[in-house]
Length: 111
Length: 108
Image (cartoon, rainbow over all chains, first blue to last red; front, side):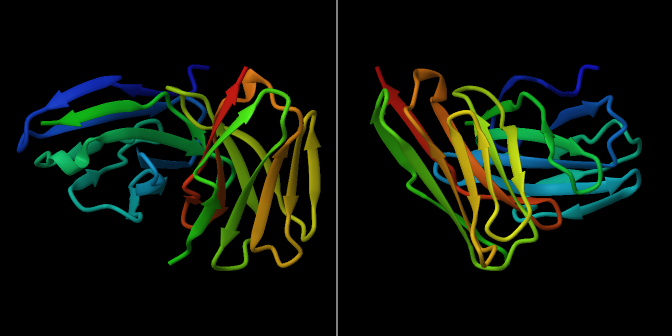
């Protein structure tokens, strides 16, 4: 199993550009989630999904969209990138409310 | 909303010294989990505590869950350079609410 995979690993965007961070898991996990990690802030939940077709907002959802059309994939879309979205983004998946398995992360810089 | 606070934010220790990080929640937790993140890496699950007053050990790591299930601690005995990283606690919610983390530096 590849576990949780994320692409790209690194990305630089200009303010106002849009992009999609990809996340896929091959463990047939129901739950998937997106976190952002900033220095001194820990991991903050952006959006999550408890199954295909179901998504909900976390702590910091503004500026991000998600969809869950399949069990395996959970892309995160930045609609109009802002410097405040410079961060490391982690995707995670789990069985039910069990301990999440994290992907390797995407390091995003918005200039 | 639920908050999980962690102290200290940073800790530098000499190799061989002990290290402790503390996690406090504003609400009672059904369980608490601990994660380790190596520099440049992703969080990796270490352990879950469920019962009030529970103590679990993993080699030199000791995890405790408070009697009121609102706080927890991770203690590392005789730190080694391989212990370097950031340690997070996390409480359950819609997904998981992570503490701010404690970054441990071990000086050889």
